[in-house]
Image (cartoon, rainbow, N blue to C red; front, side, top):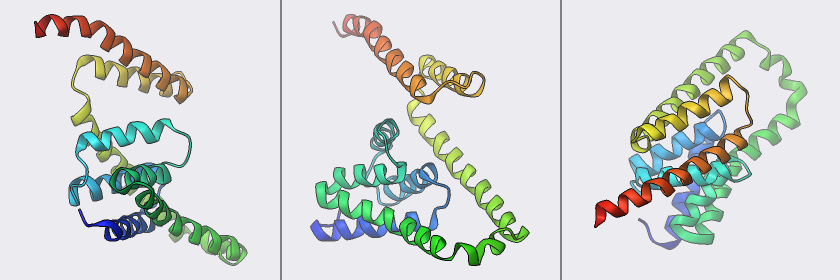
Length: 192
């Protein structure tokens, strides 16, 4: 990895690039960040990225900013977190300010069928990015029948029963703790 200020500059520019060209919010940015920091730069392993996902999804705040702060902190503490967060924030703040300043001037443009078609195409691309990221994470993290049962239960809870995601996360945490509690004695027996 680059040294000191170069690392901060690289984090800033990386998140600036990701946030500038990625449309679709936090999950789309996470997919792009995974590509940048796991695949391209090799600063994180798949396990590191899974840990990042677990932490940032369970804390309040915007996923893009949470991931920038977490990754920046992991790589270069305070200055890395600040540089990465600023890079992730700058494009959104700039675009929102421009839209707010000229909203009445562009409202007809936004209603154009071509612009609406472009937005639909962008949405399809975002869904593909998020899906691919989920598949890659699943390959690395869903290693037992128990893991798959938690995933299936969570999908059913959200899709069929409309349960609150916070409740599902709490239940998944509880299930993981119970799994460790009941598998730990069996593991100790194998270690003897």
